[in-house]
Image (cartoon, rainbow, N blue to C red; front, side, top):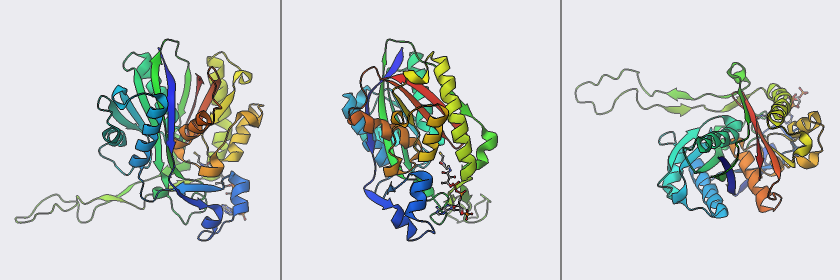
Amino acid sequence: MIGKILGTGSYVPGKVLDNNDLAKFIDTNDEWIRERTGIVKRHLIEDDTTVTMAAEAAKRALENAKVSAEEIDLILLSTVSSNVILPSTACEVQKIIGAVNAVCFDLNAACSGFLFALNTAQAYIHAGMINTALIIGAESLSNIMDWQDRGTAILFGDGAGAAVLAAEEGHIFPTVMHSDGAKGDALLCQSRFRREQSTSLELKSGETDIPGTAGFPVDTYVQMNGQEVFKFAVRQVPLAIEELLSACDKTTEDIDLFVLHQANKRIVEGVAKRLHMDMERFPMNLMEYGNTSSASIPILLDELNRQGRLQKGMKLVLAGFGAGLSWGAAYMEW
Ligand code: COA
């Protein structure tokens, strides 16, 4: 059995921050950001949360797939920036959309998250454990940005994307996934949990509060060595795609579209160049949304789908890369 994408959905918040807006409070400018990244604007949450965006993208994907929430066996949600730690973001989405028969959990593989979730759902389907999966990438990265750091604040945005996957007869395609934790320092976000008082849990007679349990994360923001991440992406993504195509017995010429994680226009161009491919096969929407981490691939996929650019039988390669470091690629026939 193989999982086939029956429908897609996405949601981005309405508030837009363009490069000129950013230049009002960071030492940067529109020309520099466009030239070095391709990004023109990003959408940021106001009243939305990771959960509400994920639920909206999920509803749109179910509608597009013509699948009811009750038919979903698995909700697999990728995020690094949820507004909830417990319960899982996936369970919160389940509650909102009424997917009462689904088992739900979150997955953190940063910007490779949607790709890893897709591959995981495929494995569940292939093993006969489930029939229908809802996979979601959702991020409120604006909550974990240091808005004074021009090396990161210019790059990221908020949003969510989703896809409904259903089992059908067919051979599962090989996938490629890699991680290199030893290089994780290049892109990280560390939670510093604060304890308000002592760490002692001993209660004195008459005390109602438990000292040391009022912890919550503070100063949690993304830190990055931009050049290192850039070099990693441009080197590893083409290798992963070549590894994937060889395992699938395909060549780059067979592929209609390469749907890459939307981090930086120059990274996408660098990957295309190393694969000796025309940029026409590398759709991009990072100009509008910036880097939305695990939401970027499903948002782009949904846009292509709704624009009618994905015809039945088209051959796609999806590729993700990011913190971990982690990276990978998947082949699919639409
Ligand atoms: N605005 C204006 N100038 C900036 C700037 C900004 N936002 N950020 C850096 N600069 C300046 C630097 O201070 C430096 O100035 P100098 O030459 O006078 O010293 C110059 O621009 C070049 O800086 P550098 O850091 O070498 O820029 P870069 O070309 O590497 O671009 C990134 C920086 C972050 C855009 C780029 O490294 C990148 O996109 N990396 C990948 C990041 C990524 O995609 N991460 C997520 C992966 S999932």
